[in-house]
Length: 132
Image 1 (spheres, helix red, strand yellow):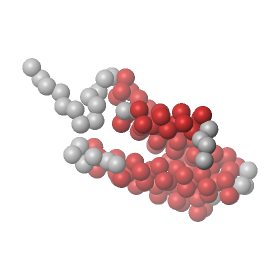
Image 2 (tube, rainbow, N blue to C red; image 1 turned 120 degrees about the vertical axis):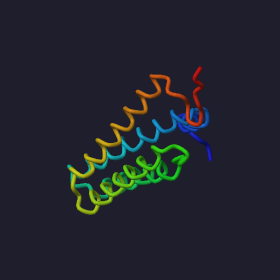
Image 3 (tube, one colour; image 1 turned 90 degrees about the horizontal axis):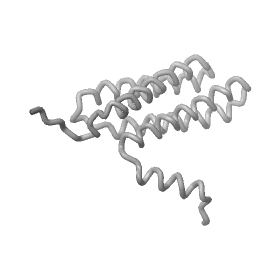
Image 4 (tube, rainbow, N blue to C red; image 1 turned 135 degrees about the horizontal axis):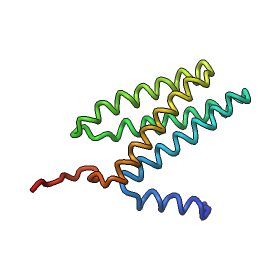
């Protein structure tokens, strides 16, 4: 099967990205899918809604499964991801836009936090800093 140039580019992007960049890519995907799902709710197109909420849930599951528990923050992130996942399920079942939008807000905040940490030059995942 022949891959499109865009598919080849995306695969190359993923393979050459840092762990931090991959997290940003996952957040971007979840944000995109939730926005499409909310639009589907607005248009009462529940097939689109269900498909895109499911895609967002898959991304959240991936984020949950790749946490590194040697960092204390991972337990807190897991709880937040679990809550976001719950919001997505409830939003999909009840077709309540507000629940999806709440999940979207948390994901956007997490993405913004990661971007800020990267800008500040926070040590890469697994690195330690030496003092003195």
